[in-house]
Amino acid sequence: MSSARRTIADLRLFGRGYLRNIVGLFFGIIFPVIIISLFGAIFAGSGGAVTIFVQNKDTGPFNLPITDIATPFINALNGTNVNGTLLNSNTTWPITVQLVDPSVNFSRYLADHSASDGVMIPQNFSLNYVAGQPFNITVYGNPAQSSSAIVSGVIDAVVNGFNLQRVHGTNTIQVTSATVNTEQTKYIDFLVPGLIGFSILVSPMFSMVNITSEYKKVKLFKQLSLTPLHKMEWLASKVIFYIILSVISFLFLVVVGVYGFGAHMTLTPWLIPFLILGPMLFSSLGMLVGTVTKSVETASVLGNIITFPMMFLSGTFFPIATMPAYLQNFAHVLPLFYIVEGLNNVMVYGNIPAALLDIAVTTAITAVVFVAAAKIFKWRED
Image 1 (cartoon, rainbow, N blue to C red):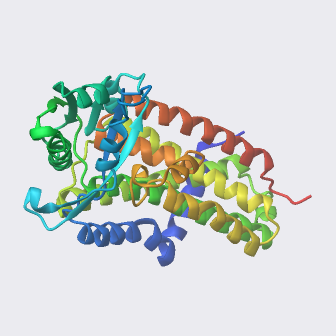
Image 2 (tube, one colour):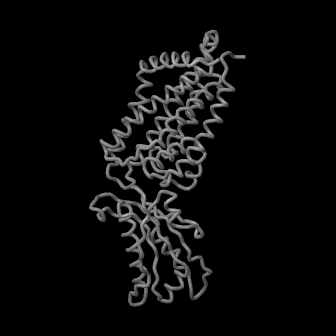
Image 3 (cartoon, rainbow, N blue to C red):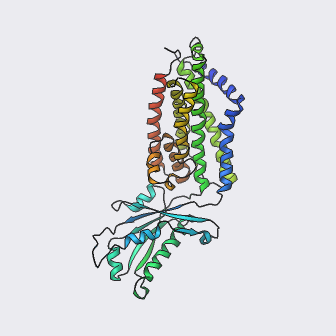
């Protein structure tokens, strides 16, 4: 029968050993702080890429003399590089367009995706433009965000350009403003949750891969099997330790991000599931990798193959929205994606319904990996 006393005893023993390991301590706590300091200094004040969500309801059919005007209008928005003089800055913001299904509720879509900048192109856009009939496009934004000022300036410039192409420069296209209430997004705001996810991944994963494979090699598990300690108690003590380590790293990163670089963070109890499930998931995954491999070297290689894509493609250092579509699709199969996305939804966007979905997915993945690790892991080799 499992004993909390034995679990705590093993936790203390493992914790003391870990704290004496300078390398483990460095990568567990100090390294993420160094990264946030480095990236925060490099990208301080940078707006990064600006995404404009566009819903095109002008879907045709088009034929002479009515041609498709909406597509050239969208192309004029896409790929624009905006000089930061709009906001008294030396930064340049590249503009990218992301199309939205014409059938969805556009304002709800923006809110659900924690976005504020969008353009709705109405039905009969091309027909009215060719006929010279004035009509409105709706531009969504949030006055509290620097990106919305950039988007507004870009759209005004494109609208003016299209209006000047009309005979006598008729103001056929007019702009109506609408507001989407989302909180802001400086690069540092994304970086803090991303590095929290990074620390949740790296320490448990690499440590458990190395510990499990090394213990197998030196037959230490066989010796542990002769003690009263149960294998589930051993695993539980490791999970608890990495939860504590993740909380400590979380506090360091939030303090540095907020007080060092002015990050805007919202701290709520909804963060707790990610700080528990994340270490549990990657401790179990690390143990699973170390258990199924036959040597320390093989375990290390396999652990790196699993870990490195998650480190760089799960939104750890850069928002997923700035990546190409095929990488965004690939990111959705990575367990760390749901932790980083959930942390962003809670800390940056305040989008709790989306965070609940991330918690549900993370819980399901954690349950599968934990059960698999517990089933396959053995004290003794066959």
